[in-house]
Image (cartoon, rainbow, N blue to C red):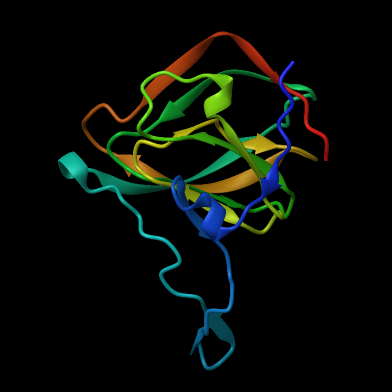
Length: 166
């Protein structure tokens, strides 16, 4: 059994995989008669390759039982893909470097969000689908629509079991 201890998600440790979407020390722009703080341009949306267009979706994810069995990973060669939590519940982010063509357990990196942070995976970064922990969780997902093959999957020769010690 492989035991991965998730590290807290932050912009510096996640930079090779994508962007952390959260409100930090950024100064907001006041809009709507001064009643709304706009935290602007938190992460670029990369969907334009091969005449792609941006999609806004909601994904509802049921938590897997612990320990988590990981069968495979996916990546998107034509676009970034963002997951923004709507349920205020922590979730796991499992990733591997985009340069790799095949994956082993040693290539995996696990992060824990604080429940208010989102992620925007860079184009071609290997990632697992959203891993809700505490409850069924909704995610606002921003990704690419259009022509072209924008999904690559890798399946491990045997399932990887991740026992999470929170």
